[in-house]
Length: 461
View (cartoon, rainbow, N blue to C red):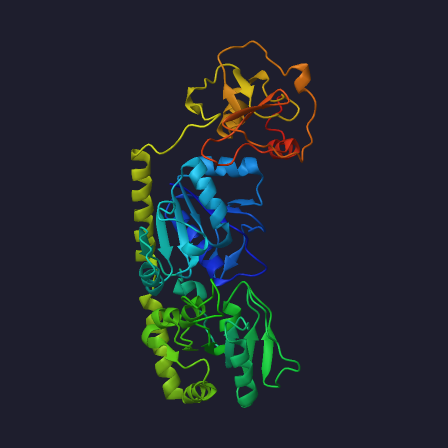
């Protein structure tokens, strides 16, 4: 399969949802599929890693131009999206008739993004409780649960430290609880780690027994300093139509690979992920957290908790869930093809019909930088013709009579001018503009953007 991951951005740091998305795509790539990643903002270097895992996704499009988006969607067999990219992914999948899988981190996301079951061919929940909660709200999507991928070997460290650690010192993750514990337990060492999102809480001055560590992309740096992980995360959030809750909590499972125990607030996600290895305390009861920390000062109690963490880490080995995800994607893709859902669009003529023994006569559907204007009939070498044909920028014609633009059509239009659709076709300034009848994206409105995208592809020596 040719799988396209569509994300909004990677942010200034790596949150759990971002890591889960990229690791899921990378796991599918390792199983032999062609995987690309399209970001509406930011970028992902090919050397980027998480723990010991080096991401192997090389095909990354950062803030792509409209032509690049069309091309990636046209070539994809399946699209996987999450978060803020969901509205655009829904629109593009509808326009290009592509099946869509949606990674979901809380039970309200599908409703929040107004994604109907008919628009999402596979809902991928990050925990069983999230799926159950969504179904109680009336969701009837084709769905499955795939836990965030945590390969124990990617996060295991040979030696741990002596600090009590909170990763992401924002309010939602329990920053205030953490700093109050540091203040009330001066005999213990505390380490607060800047997170990938949220307003970070750093008291001034810091308690003398506490340190702050900057956000890092390799969490093993944290686990080498940790003895206990704290996760006093919220489970209700602030009132409103959308709230954040700790729906899984991959930090606790990453730390468990090194036998580091976690003390957590019993959110549904943390109860499901940590299982019997979790030590649970009420987020709003400081005395419970202090008692749990002091109990782990006993070496025998700590060894027992550490063994339970190691056991839980092994139980969540992700191979079987990734295999099930792959099988479901392939099943949906096969059914999608069988139902002939793919729709021919301007420029989608069969590339295989182009012969290699001579020039190809095409009509430019867009301006080709330095070569043709919209509507011109030109000759191109087969390789370039195929490339432009795949992008929907030309169409093959059998008539070799040149038909350039009429004089009235040569006037340059303002590249910032927005096209206004009056239907499937509309005459404006003597130029025929094409529109998709299903309301999907049309061709780009900016000539200069097309020139930048084509580069030398549209030029023939």
